[in-house]
Image (tube, rainbow, N blue to C red; front, side, top):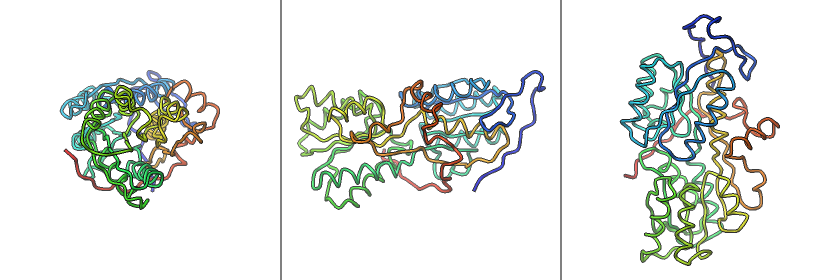
Length: 346
């Protein structure tokens, strides 16, 4: 299913704005875009920087606002953009419920809103104009299956992301299904949120090492938290004792896998994700068809296939993009038409 958008009424004359050529070759007016970030996480910042680079190259203006992980500030940022009269809002939501409210308010104001990375609550799934997200359950299932297959019978310590956003909850749901499907009899013996941050990963791992729980595998849901885990293991003199897995596929993880410090990760690259949502916005502005919801491309990476990894670093990503060697065409992605339900862990 695709949707056909209507070209919005011009707010200024073509002479004042000028016509730009979109990726599709259609004429697109220069627009004012508001981009709302959930917080200062490097993943989020990379999303905004990548989107801004592409949009500015097409002649659009982009203003970025940071919600500092506050649902109330997220709503305030969206309302500020509505009051300002931006043409498009892109929202990387830190909370599914506030994201749904933001989508409702933007829609009521007649402003298209596109979600990237995170999604609204299941009840608000049909509200946004478009969405590019990770397949969070699929990500968790891939890692869970890999761990269950490679480490049968071993206990696992889990370092999760921010609760309430939906991402950590869905990864956990997929992870549990993956280790169950692998049939290795693994048990999750420790679980806590590291808040997607390096310090969070450090503190949680220190607590785990000081606990009386027996475990030999750690899965941290992103490489930032994994960096804290590796630091904690090093400081405790336990480097190499525990098998490590992560998600997101950041360049530092490539080095860990080459060194044997970490065994695997599922890539969910912010540069590629931002590229896909940029293409979605551009097609909307051109009045062209586009899939309303697609997943980011999320391959499992190990030391054996690290040469296929998609860069987070923007210039490196652009070099591969310009060379035409990436799976970054929005229109070639499978459209997603439904959303699973999930429950908050907090």
